[in-house]
Length: 307
Length: 268
Image 1 (cartoon, rainbow over the protein chains, first blue to last red):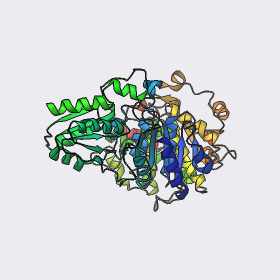
Image 2 (image 1 turned 180 degrees about the horizontal axis):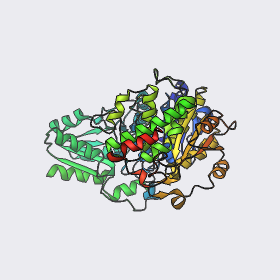
Image 3 (image 1 turned 45 degrees about the vertical axis):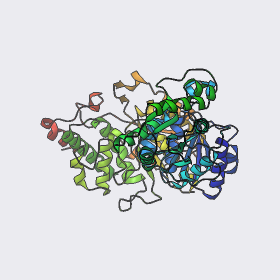
Image 4 (image 1 turned 60 degrees about the vertical axis):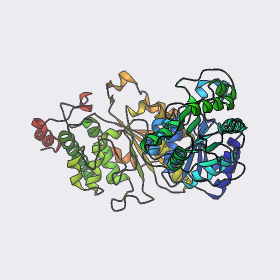
């Protein structure tokens, strides 16, 4: 997905001279085409994420679009106050792009897992929080991000993600995309974990359980209509995300359910428990340890429907 | 230069009155930078109170945002904001908060947490260069602000980028929140440090409007290098019993001393 993001951004930047990239010495093998095509719009501030974000804010406040880009938590938590005070308070046109949401970096370990980012980013005023699930959404979300005037958080995948949509999609910030129709239960997910959700739904379909599958690619602003419809017109809601159980997609959906006074027939959040993920292994293996691969997801859906 | 001195005096008087009325702190920080702010707004910055968003204006960022009242005074004196606003500093539904705010006409950027000003100033200087504009970016820092790692990240990057349209001024009163900076994070030998970091450096008496003007009107000091002005100052300059004290970061002038202090500041 990161390759698709960088390719799409490069194409957009050829037509939009406002776009600058401000890096903190991360991006080997991906950012070189931008660097070489736009040397006067490319800055590597060194391993200094606070400065990266401040410099990007200053560039953006002068009528430009500045993209900060790094892996996992580096461009968010390390420089959170710069995002809050500088970018969001000034409504600066800064786009914060992370590569490797969730546990994409697997065995690199806890320091390289981004598992609280959605909760933290969506608590900041003025920012859009976007989690594309496959290459089609990644391309569409990149265009939408540049067209949007203001702070934007883009949680990119890593590499080798499977496509979930079957082709280019209609995409709008804050408007969920339905992957598959069904009324027995709604599976709401964000990010590349959606491929496992689809597999789980296939297994459930073989048992006669028809799942609605919804990609909630925008966590903020959340698509209330999609949640209300799922709560009223399907057999319940299960949320699936590669994130801590606190504050992410599931919490955002639960907030809407509570605020709207909805009573879905069942409701379950699937996510990492409130722990530092310290198990050593690849992304798929770690997910599986916490019931977030297809088999675990299907089991949780069955259990939720039985209650 | 007489006008600069008058503006500096009024900055001190306004700061004392505003912090007294608000029962708020940081008067020492405001008084130590009074001449720096006066010279910037009267003689150096290419800004227009009638058109505060003029695209080609010079940018000024107060990175020591807690000294906001001193800048608000200058903005009122120069006509960016109505003088009446000053009397409602800190007040419910007022226009002026305790830390500098971009919601105020003439203020470029909000700060308050230290270490935020210079990185943004660097970004603005880069943007000016990209736009092929000759506008400059000035940033005012402090002892405490120079403790922050992000400030040093920006110091290194500004030199790397040869940003000679960037000027960093240090209000060097040598005191920070809990004591004398030499006992906490000693910045010395500062001129040598900054030269070694790739900046062109000048040292001035930060209470001499003439020395400040001579330095600030000579930027860039060296082509291809950002400029650093070390302005040696005295914290809370002008209030004898609070001068050069940590307490001046926290205390306001109480009602019973107000008239006497203001008379002295005015040289009466």
